[in-house]
View 1 (cartoon, rainbow, N blue to C red):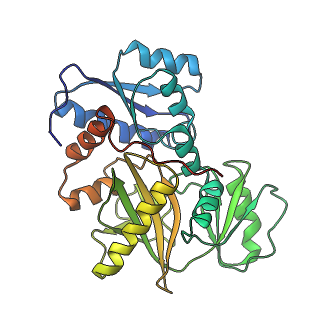
View 2 (spheres, one colour):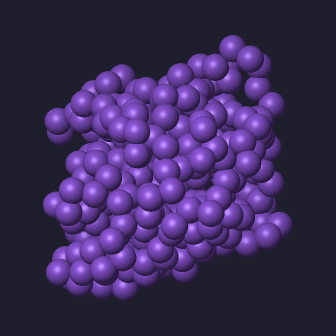
Length: 318
Protein backbone atom coordinates (compact mmCIF):
# COMPACT_ATOMS: atom_id res chain seq x y z
CA UNK A 1 0.00 0.00 0.00
CA UNK A 2 1.41 3.37 -1.02
CA UNK A 3 -0.35 5.31 1.74
CA UNK A 4 -1.31 8.10 -0.64
CA UNK A 5 -4.16 8.28 -3.10
CA UNK A 6 -4.13 10.35 -6.33
CA UNK A 7 -4.79 14.02 -5.60
CA UNK A 8 -7.43 14.24 -8.32
CA UNK A 9 -9.40 11.29 -6.92
CA UNK A 10 -12.76 12.13 -5.36
CA UNK A 11 -14.41 9.31 -3.45
CA UNK A 12 -18.08 9.05 -2.59
CA UNK A 13 -18.87 7.17 0.62
CA UNK A 14 -22.41 5.77 0.56
CA UNK A 15 -24.10 5.41 3.93
CA UNK A 16 -27.51 5.11 5.52
CA UNK A 17 -29.80 3.16 3.27
CA UNK A 18 -33.38 2.12 3.85
CA UNK A 19 -33.01 -1.16 5.77
CA UNK A 20 -33.29 -1.86 9.49
CA UNK A 21 -29.51 -1.47 9.59
CA UNK A 22 -29.55 2.20 8.57
CA UNK A 23 -28.03 3.55 11.79
CA UNK A 24 -25.24 0.97 11.73
CA UNK A 25 -24.57 1.85 8.10
CA UNK A 26 -24.38 5.55 8.92
CA UNK A 27 -21.84 4.78 11.63
CA UNK A 28 -19.74 2.62 9.27
CA UNK A 29 -19.88 5.23 6.52
CA UNK A 30 -18.92 8.10 8.84
CA UNK A 31 -15.85 6.25 10.03
CA UNK A 32 -14.79 5.45 6.46
CA UNK A 33 -15.41 9.08 5.49
CA UNK A 34 -13.36 10.37 8.42
CA UNK A 35 -10.51 7.96 7.62
CA UNK A 36 -10.33 9.25 4.05
CA UNK A 37 -10.51 12.86 5.23
CA UNK A 38 -7.57 12.23 7.57
CA UNK A 39 -5.61 11.23 4.46
CA UNK A 40 -6.57 14.56 2.88
CA UNK A 41 -8.55 12.75 0.20
CA UNK A 42 -11.35 14.64 -1.54
CA UNK A 43 -14.34 12.79 -0.12
CA UNK A 44 -18.12 13.19 -0.25
CA UNK A 45 -20.52 11.63 2.24
CA UNK A 46 -23.64 10.53 0.35
CA UNK A 47 -26.67 9.60 2.45
CA UNK A 48 -28.76 7.06 0.56
CA UNK A 49 -32.33 7.46 1.83
CA UNK A 50 -34.26 6.25 -1.20
CA UNK A 51 -34.55 3.22 -3.47
CA UNK A 52 -35.24 5.34 -6.55
CA UNK A 53 -32.59 4.57 -9.14
CA UNK A 54 -32.97 8.01 -10.71
CA UNK A 55 -32.52 9.81 -7.37
CA UNK A 56 -29.54 7.68 -6.38
CA UNK A 57 -27.94 8.24 -9.77
CA UNK A 58 -28.42 12.00 -9.39
CA UNK A 59 -27.00 11.99 -5.85
CA UNK A 60 -23.84 10.23 -6.99
CA UNK A 61 -23.38 12.16 -10.23
CA UNK A 62 -23.90 15.51 -8.51
CA UNK A 63 -20.77 14.88 -6.42
CA UNK A 64 -18.66 14.08 -9.52
CA UNK A 65 -16.91 11.22 -7.75
CA UNK A 66 -14.42 8.94 -9.48
CA UNK A 67 -14.84 6.00 -7.09
CA UNK A 68 -17.42 4.83 -4.57
CA UNK A 69 -17.03 3.16 -1.19
CA UNK A 70 -20.29 1.38 -0.35
CA UNK A 71 -20.89 1.23 3.41
CA UNK A 72 -24.54 0.20 3.20
CA UNK A 73 -25.82 -2.79 5.15
CA UNK A 74 -28.86 -4.97 4.61
CA UNK A 75 -31.49 -4.67 1.91
CA UNK A 76 -30.58 -2.29 -0.93
CA UNK A 77 -27.04 -2.22 0.31
CA UNK A 78 -25.67 -5.73 0.26
CA UNK A 79 -28.13 -7.42 -2.10
CA UNK A 80 -26.71 -6.20 -5.41
CA UNK A 81 -29.23 -3.46 -6.17
CA UNK A 82 -27.06 -0.46 -5.37
CA UNK A 83 -24.10 -2.19 -7.02
CA UNK A 84 -26.10 -2.54 -10.24
CA UNK A 85 -26.89 1.18 -10.24
CA UNK A 86 -23.24 2.14 -9.76
CA UNK A 87 -22.12 -0.25 -12.50
CA UNK A 88 -24.49 1.48 -14.93
CA UNK A 89 -22.69 4.73 -14.10
CA UNK A 90 -19.37 3.05 -14.96
CA UNK A 91 -17.85 4.16 -11.65
CA UNK A 92 -15.50 1.75 -9.84
CA UNK A 93 -16.65 0.79 -6.35
CA UNK A 94 -15.47 -1.12 -3.30
CA UNK A 95 -16.98 -4.50 -2.69
CA UNK A 96 -18.49 -7.38 -4.57
CA UNK A 97 -20.36 -7.45 -7.88
CA UNK A 98 -24.18 -7.36 -8.00
CA UNK A 99 -24.42 -11.13 -8.37
CA UNK A 100 -21.88 -11.96 -5.66
CA UNK A 101 -23.57 -9.45 -3.34
CA UNK A 102 -26.95 -11.11 -3.88
CA UNK A 103 -25.51 -14.58 -3.30
CA UNK A 104 -23.90 -13.42 -0.04
CA UNK A 105 -27.09 -11.75 1.16
CA UNK A 106 -29.36 -14.65 0.26
CA UNK A 107 -28.63 -17.33 2.86
CA UNK A 108 -30.50 -20.01 0.91
CA UNK A 109 -28.53 -19.43 -2.29
CA UNK A 110 -25.19 -19.17 -0.50
CA UNK A 111 -25.83 -22.39 1.42
CA UNK A 112 -26.65 -24.19 -1.83
CA UNK A 113 -23.31 -23.11 -3.25
CA UNK A 114 -21.42 -24.02 -0.07
CA UNK A 115 -22.95 -27.49 -0.18
CA UNK A 116 -22.10 -27.95 -3.84
CA UNK A 117 -18.52 -26.80 -3.24
CA UNK A 118 -18.12 -29.23 -0.30
CA UNK A 119 -17.93 -26.37 2.20
CA UNK A 120 -19.59 -27.59 5.38
CA UNK A 121 -22.67 -25.61 6.48
CA UNK A 122 -25.36 -26.58 9.01
CA UNK A 123 -28.25 -28.69 7.67
CA UNK A 124 -31.19 -26.44 6.86
CA UNK A 125 -34.63 -26.11 5.39
CA UNK A 126 -36.44 -23.12 3.91
CA UNK A 127 -39.85 -21.93 5.09
CA UNK A 128 -42.08 -19.79 2.87
CA UNK A 129 -45.32 -20.28 4.81
CA UNK A 130 -45.55 -18.78 8.32
CA UNK A 131 -48.22 -21.33 9.21
CA UNK A 132 -46.16 -24.36 8.23
CA UNK A 133 -43.87 -25.65 10.95
CA UNK A 134 -40.99 -27.81 9.71
CA UNK A 135 -41.38 -31.22 11.28
CA UNK A 136 -38.22 -32.95 10.09
CA UNK A 137 -35.78 -31.13 12.39
CA UNK A 138 -35.08 -31.76 16.04
CA UNK A 139 -34.40 -28.95 18.47
CA UNK A 140 -32.30 -26.99 19.13
CA UNK A 141 -32.72 -24.99 15.92
CA UNK A 142 -31.66 -21.60 14.62
CA UNK A 143 -34.35 -19.54 12.91
CA UNK A 144 -33.24 -16.60 10.79
CA UNK A 145 -34.65 -14.35 8.05
CA UNK A 146 -33.22 -15.26 4.66
CA UNK A 147 -32.22 -11.73 3.72
CA UNK A 148 -31.48 -9.81 6.92
CA UNK A 149 -28.14 -8.92 8.46
CA UNK A 150 -26.75 -7.84 11.85
CA UNK A 151 -28.46 -10.93 13.33
CA UNK A 152 -31.84 -9.19 13.09
CA UNK A 153 -34.65 -11.67 13.69
CA UNK A 154 -32.30 -14.54 14.59
CA UNK A 155 -33.48 -16.87 17.37
CA UNK A 156 -32.25 -20.09 18.91
CA UNK A 157 -35.21 -22.41 19.50
CA UNK A 158 -34.65 -25.07 22.14
CA UNK A 159 -38.28 -26.18 22.53
CA UNK A 160 -40.60 -26.85 19.58
CA UNK A 161 -43.34 -24.98 21.44
CA UNK A 162 -41.33 -21.78 20.80
CA UNK A 163 -40.80 -22.41 17.08
CA UNK A 164 -43.99 -20.74 15.87
CA UNK A 165 -43.18 -17.47 17.65
CA UNK A 166 -39.62 -17.47 16.30
CA UNK A 167 -40.90 -18.07 12.76
CA UNK A 168 -43.41 -15.23 13.07
CA UNK A 169 -40.68 -12.82 14.10
CA UNK A 170 -38.36 -13.96 11.31
CA UNK A 171 -41.14 -13.62 8.73
CA UNK A 172 -41.58 -9.98 9.79
CA UNK A 173 -38.26 -9.36 7.99
CA UNK A 174 -39.15 -11.07 4.71
CA UNK A 175 -40.99 -13.78 2.83
CA UNK A 176 -38.44 -16.55 3.28
CA UNK A 177 -36.99 -17.96 6.50
CA UNK A 178 -34.09 -20.34 7.09
CA UNK A 179 -34.41 -23.01 9.78
CA UNK A 180 -31.10 -24.72 10.41
CA UNK A 181 -29.60 -27.21 12.80
CA UNK A 182 -28.00 -25.58 15.82
CA UNK A 183 -24.29 -26.37 15.96
CA UNK A 184 -22.86 -26.15 19.45
CA UNK A 185 -19.33 -24.84 19.43
CA UNK A 186 -17.17 -21.74 19.21
CA UNK A 187 -18.38 -18.73 17.23
CA UNK A 188 -15.65 -17.52 14.89
CA UNK A 189 -15.38 -14.96 12.14
CA UNK A 190 -12.67 -14.40 9.54
CA UNK A 191 -12.15 -11.14 7.69
CA UNK A 192 -11.00 -11.36 4.09
CA UNK A 193 -8.91 -8.57 2.56
CA UNK A 194 -8.02 -9.07 -1.08
CA UNK A 195 -6.63 -12.59 -1.27
CA UNK A 196 -5.70 -12.76 2.42
CA UNK A 197 -7.61 -14.22 5.34
CA UNK A 198 -7.01 -12.03 8.39
CA UNK A 199 -6.51 -13.38 11.94
CA UNK A 200 -9.42 -15.42 13.27
CA UNK A 201 -11.71 -13.66 15.75
CA UNK A 202 -13.60 -15.63 18.40
CA UNK A 203 -16.88 -14.15 19.60
CA UNK A 204 -17.89 -14.85 23.19
CA UNK A 205 -21.35 -13.29 23.64
CA UNK A 206 -22.81 -12.80 27.09
CA UNK A 207 -26.19 -13.49 25.53
CA UNK A 208 -26.98 -16.95 24.19
CA UNK A 209 -26.29 -15.77 20.67
CA UNK A 210 -24.34 -12.99 18.98
CA UNK A 211 -27.52 -11.01 18.27
CA UNK A 212 -28.04 -7.37 17.30
CA UNK A 213 -27.74 -6.16 20.90
CA UNK A 214 -24.61 -8.20 21.50
CA UNK A 215 -23.05 -6.87 18.30
CA UNK A 216 -23.55 -3.17 18.95
CA UNK A 217 -23.67 -2.72 22.74
CA UNK A 218 -20.51 -2.20 24.78
CA UNK A 219 -19.78 -5.06 27.13
CA UNK A 220 -22.30 -7.51 25.65
CA UNK A 221 -19.64 -9.62 23.94
CA UNK A 222 -15.97 -10.43 24.30
CA UNK A 223 -13.83 -10.65 21.18
CA UNK A 224 -10.62 -12.66 21.20
CA UNK A 225 -8.24 -11.91 18.34
CA UNK A 226 -6.33 -13.86 17.41
CA UNK A 227 -8.54 -16.70 18.60
CA UNK A 228 -6.80 -19.22 20.82
CA UNK A 229 -6.36 -22.04 18.34
CA UNK A 230 -3.60 -24.41 17.40
CA UNK A 231 -1.67 -23.08 14.41
CA UNK A 232 -2.77 -25.87 12.11
CA UNK A 233 -6.44 -25.42 13.00
CA UNK A 234 -6.22 -21.64 12.60
CA UNK A 235 -4.72 -22.07 9.13
CA UNK A 236 -7.46 -24.52 8.16
CA UNK A 237 -10.21 -22.16 9.36
CA UNK A 238 -8.74 -19.30 7.33
CA UNK A 239 -8.42 -21.58 4.32
CA UNK A 240 -12.11 -22.54 4.53
CA UNK A 241 -13.11 -18.87 4.93
CA UNK A 242 -11.17 -17.87 1.82
CA UNK A 243 -12.73 -20.76 -0.11
CA UNK A 244 -16.22 -19.58 0.87
CA UNK A 245 -15.39 -15.98 -0.12
CA UNK A 246 -14.20 -17.15 -3.54
CA UNK A 247 -17.07 -19.61 -4.01
CA UNK A 248 -19.58 -16.75 -3.97
CA UNK A 249 -17.37 -14.57 -6.18
CA UNK A 250 -16.70 -11.91 -3.54
CA UNK A 251 -13.93 -9.36 -4.01
CA UNK A 252 -11.93 -6.72 -2.11
CA UNK A 253 -13.21 -7.55 1.38
CA UNK A 254 -15.78 -9.58 3.29
CA UNK A 255 -16.29 -11.33 6.60
CA UNK A 256 -17.07 -15.03 6.92
CA UNK A 257 -19.05 -16.17 9.98
CA UNK A 258 -18.32 -19.71 11.15
CA UNK A 259 -18.76 -22.24 13.93
CA UNK A 260 -16.06 -24.59 15.14
CA UNK A 261 -18.25 -27.46 16.30
CA UNK A 262 -17.60 -29.62 19.32
CA UNK A 263 -16.86 -32.32 16.74
CA UNK A 264 -13.96 -30.08 15.55
CA UNK A 265 -15.62 -29.63 12.17
CA UNK A 266 -15.62 -26.15 10.59
CA UNK A 267 -19.07 -24.91 9.56
CA UNK A 268 -19.61 -21.79 7.43
CA UNK A 269 -22.77 -19.92 8.44
CA UNK A 270 -22.81 -16.96 6.07
CA UNK A 271 -20.74 -14.26 4.38
CA UNK A 272 -21.07 -10.52 4.94
CA UNK A 273 -20.07 -8.87 1.67
CA UNK A 274 -20.07 -5.43 3.35
CA UNK A 275 -19.06 -6.13 6.94
CA UNK A 276 -19.47 -3.49 9.61
CA UNK A 277 -16.86 -0.78 9.91
CA UNK A 278 -17.93 0.67 13.26
CA UNK A 279 -16.00 0.86 16.53
CA UNK A 280 -17.58 -2.49 17.49
CA UNK A 281 -16.90 -4.19 14.17
CA UNK A 282 -14.77 -7.26 13.71
CA UNK A 283 -13.07 -6.69 10.36
CA UNK A 284 -11.22 -3.61 11.72
CA UNK A 285 -10.29 -5.63 14.83
CA UNK A 286 -8.80 -8.42 12.72
CA UNK A 287 -6.94 -5.87 10.59
CA UNK A 288 -5.56 -4.21 13.74
CA UNK A 289 -4.28 -7.58 14.95
CA UNK A 290 -2.67 -7.97 11.54
CA UNK A 291 -0.87 -4.66 12.15
CA UNK A 292 -3.13 -2.38 10.12
CA UNK A 293 -4.74 0.78 11.45
CA UNK A 294 -8.32 1.56 10.46
CA UNK A 295 -7.03 4.16 8.00
CA UNK A 296 -4.69 1.57 6.47
CA UNK A 297 -7.62 -0.83 6.07
CA UNK A 298 -9.74 1.76 4.26
CA UNK A 299 -6.86 2.90 2.05
CA UNK A 300 -6.00 -0.68 1.12
CA UNK A 301 -9.58 -1.31 -0.01
CA UNK A 302 -9.69 1.92 -2.01
CA UNK A 303 -6.36 1.15 -3.68
CA UNK A 304 -7.69 -2.24 -4.76
CA UNK A 305 -10.62 -0.42 -6.36
CA UNK A 306 -8.67 2.23 -8.26
CA UNK A 307 -5.95 -0.16 -9.40
CA UNK A 308 -8.41 -2.85 -10.43
CA UNK A 309 -6.81 -5.47 -8.20
CA UNK A 310 -8.46 -8.62 -6.92
CA UNK A 311 -11.12 -8.72 -9.57
CA UNK A 312 -14.27 -10.67 -8.94
CA UNK A 313 -13.81 -14.38 -8.79
CA UNK A 314 -15.90 -16.38 -11.23
CA UNK A 315 -19.30 -16.41 -9.54
CA UNK A 316 -20.96 -19.77 -9.16
CA UNK A 317 -24.21 -20.48 -10.92
CA UNK A 318 -27.05 -21.55 -8.67
